[in-house]
Length: 320
Ligand code: XMP
Image (cartoon, rainbow, N blue to C red):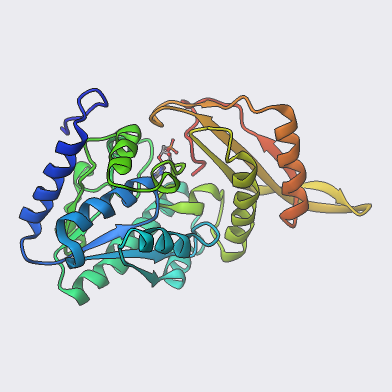
């Protein structure tokens, strides 16, 4: 059982100092690899790990082909300004090969987990001689995986998987006792810019969590474009998270006076404190209209745009 550090109990300076010395004592004079996605959690781990190990920590962002537009370069840039070097590892083909023909949501998540941890990080750890992987798992990730709701891509020990046996390295999780709000406070104290510590959450399975049905490069491109449109329109609404989802079914529409059997995009925008429960944001109708219009104009092949008004539960935030 992991003991939660609530916001009330969080002593930020002590938390950072404790995690830094913990990492130093575990890794000793060895090296470690840091799995950076550019999300809030892994960005905070990167700063803690950098304080603890400096250049003995290799920060890797995996270009898995399912990230948002320009994401890897953007994250490398953010960290360059903080004096932290981040390497980009290209694994697009491996991810698309693993996702080919996979439709079931849990199988999709499993394919992504295996490609990240067994193939890509497994190979890096072997090649570099590192024995440890740092990652940004938080308490909410564990709750949902242990409850059998959703297999979060980064949870192992708590569901009986020994990473050493399964992948050949040990995993260090400095944020395991925190939830999102606590992580953000720690991030701010570590000097991350608001662009990073206040970023909306983004899941490890990335845009694949927003594609119903098969994840192909073409379908990812559609969701990626829809995400650009949505994030631009909603960036100032102050919601917990928002996302565009590509449905599997097509619907009849019309374009230029002709029948167009087109794609459907579902928009979700959530108010939440810790992602355990959530309510749809009451977006103004003219905002919804702008979303629909721009989505249809800018994402080719889309003829239907819907806004989800279900709550979590029974919905989850992501569609997959
Ligand atoms: P759900 O969809 O379960 O999401 O309501 C709750 C929060 O977790 C994020 N999420 C993930 N984060 N690995 C992650 O690191 C995952 O596999 C994963 N799946 C969902 C989701 O974006 C939301 O913020």
